[in-house]
Length: 276
Image 1: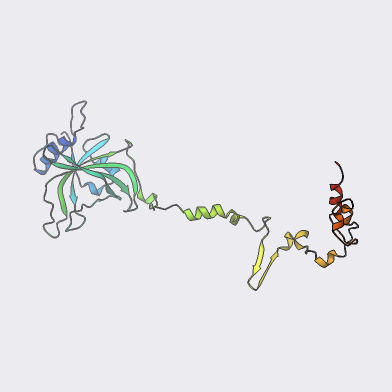
Image 2: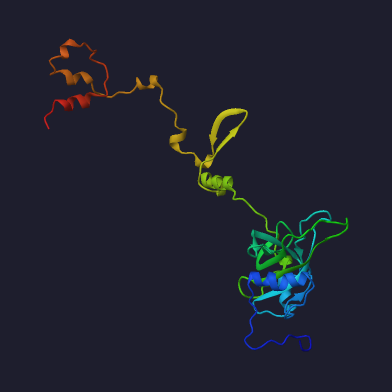
C-alpha cells in the first residue's frame, strides 16, 4: 500500500469465486489471520445506502466487497437486523451452501428496498452475503446484539451503474387490487356520466303516487293520446256491408246475418272473388 491506496499490477482483476471468498478471505478474517492483499474494506455496511458504498470501497469497478459485522434485530433472537441507510435489505431465494464435501459457508442473496418496510421501493442493488456455517450464534448475554463479528458482502447493481434512490421523492408503494366492481359498474351504466341536458326522457316518481309523469319537454302527441272507447265505435259509419261478399257464395244462404250490420272486412272479401 502507498499513501493509503493499494498498488496492484496492470491488468489486475478481482473476481473471486464463492469458494475462494469463503476459504481465503472470510475464514481467515474470522480467525484473525492476515490476508494476502488487503483489498476488502472493513465497514458497518448497514449504516450506508448501497449507492454510497462504492465511495468507501478499497477496490472495485462494477462490484465491491466489504467485511461487515451483523447485528441482531432482537436481543434474544437470531434474526439479523436488515435496516440500512434510508431503506432495508430483503432476502430473496434460497440459501446456497459453500464448500465440498464439508460446508464452510452460506451464501444469501438480498435486494435493497428504499423506504420503510414493508412498503419500500425495490431497487436494482443486489448483495451476496457470505457467513460461516456451523457457528454458535446464541444470544449469550442479554444485551449482546452482535450476531456475527464478520460477514463478507459483495455489492453490485444489475444495471451496471450507480443508481441513487431518494426514498423521500417516492410515495410509499401501496398494493392496490383492481376495482373490478367499479369497472363493471361503469360498463353497465354508462348513462351515469351524461349531463342532465342529455336528450333522454326521465321519469319523475313520488312515493305519494304511483303515477309516472314524463317531463313536459319530452311529451309527444301519441303518448298523451287516450285509447278510444268501445261505445264510440258504434257511431262510425263505414258505408259498406260485409254480406256483399257472400252473395255468390253457395254456403252464404246457410248463414243469416242482419243486412244492415257493418263490417270492416267487406273490401277484403270482395277481392277474394276477383281474378288476378
